[in-house]
Each structure stands twice: as C-alpha cells, then as structure tokens.
Length: 96
Image 1 (cartoon, rainbow, N blue to C red):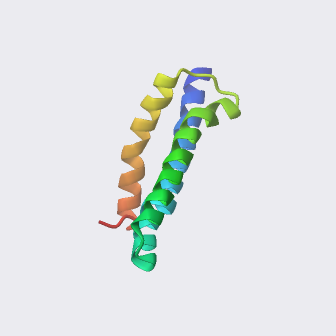
Image 2 (image 1 turned 45 degrees about the horizontal axis):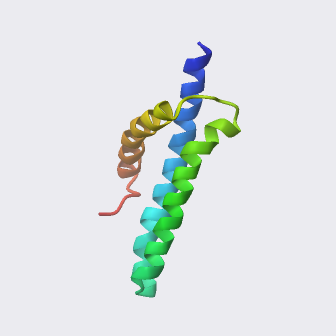
C-alpha cells in the first residue's frame, strides 16, 4: 500500500512540474521569439527548461524520500503527460 501512495505522490509531483514547464518554458518561448526576434535566446531558454525538467524528474522523488527505480519514474512521467496536456488544452493555456 505504501508503494501505491508513493506512486500517487510522484504522479502529482510530476503533474505540477510538467505544468510549470509547459506554461513557463514552452509557451514562454513563443513570446521570447516574438518580442526579441532572436532565436538563439529562445533556444537557450528552452535548453534551460529541459534541463530543469530532467533534473526534477530524476531528483525530486529522492528529495522527498521516495526511492523508486528510474524506469518507474520515467513511466509515471509518460503517464502524466496526457492529463497535463489535456487539462491545459481545456483551460485554453496551450497555443498552436
């Protein structure tokens, strides 16, 4: 039972992390390109965002005391992607 609760905690942690990533970095890249007219800065911004995402996927469960294998971390992250993008699309926060 404790493992299931840990997986649920990680699911919600990744849900919040991916939502922040999408709203700050993916949507923010569009505005950076539009306002600054510089693709290099927007690409650098995206690389920083991807680094933030990878580090959070790998290290956050360990920081809150949940020890699971990387395969399960990756699997939970893949499962989180669908509800995050559906929710953000329903709320109208995703642009094309």
